[in-house]
Each structure stands twice: as C-alpha cells, then as structure tokens.
Length: 160
Ligand SMILES: [Zn+2]
Image 1 (cartoon, rainbow, N blue to C red):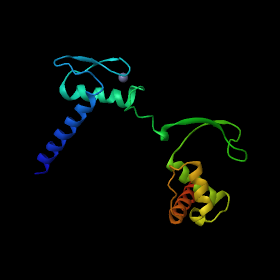
Image 2: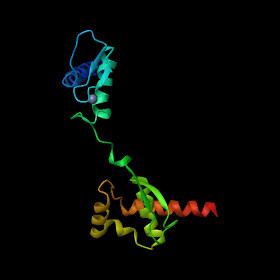
Image 3: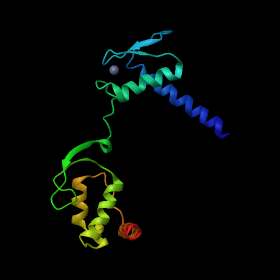
Image 4: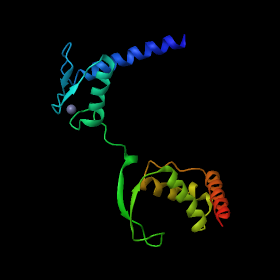
C-alpha cells in the first residue's frame, strides 16, 4: 500500500512542478531545448523528468531575474572580519560565517574563560543580545552548556 501511495504523490508533485516550469519557459512539443523567459538563456529540456528538473533548478538557483530565484542561504554567507581585541589572534583577519556549533562552543567559553554561570543562557538581556546579533542562533539550555563545558574540560585534560 505504501509504495503505491508514494507513486501517487510523485505523480502529483511532478505534475505540479511541470506546470510551474512552463510558466517560465515556452512549451514546445518535441523540442530538445527551450529559452528562459527571464534571462533568455537557452537550456536543454530533453527527457520528461530530467528536463523539467534542470529547468526548475535554473529558475531556483541560477536565474537571478527569475521570480523563483532563491537567494543563497544566510548560513553560508561568509564575511572577512578582524578578530576583536582581547581574543585569540586579535587584530588578524578571519573568515566568519554563522555556525550553530561554533556559537555553542563560544557560549561554553563564556562560562569557562569569563567565569560566567551556565544560567547566563536564561538571562533576558543575554537572549536579546544574542537575537540581535543573529536570530538564527537557537539558545541552548543551561544543562547543555554545562555538559559542553565538561566535555571541553575533559578534552583539555586529555591533551595535557
Ligand atoms: Zn533564466
């Protein structure tokens, strides 16, 4: 039963995708290539499924003039910034991009290096500060911070 349901879903979705695609490319029966209405780029559309998916990919990821174009994910945006005063390698240029994992590590460092309590994550001011910096960061619980600090501590002990 399950597999036939999936086939039905696939039919529905490819049918839907096709109709979206053909709003942006003139549909010519039997043609092996078509031209994007937005950037006038000629693309191959051979094969029923591969054809439409590559056209859709063009609309989503390549064609900046397409209304369906998805801007690159914020998470992947990298900036060059100077490391702040009083930190490791301060004053040097470093690449920076948002990473939940690195934020969690930095949060553990606040507790270890700056001697702040784990409960800092529950402070209203701290949460607002973090949100202003980057709303993508999901503040973790004080128990998770405590566990991370412990594992960092254990790692350091192993190194020495
Ligand atoms: Zn285009």
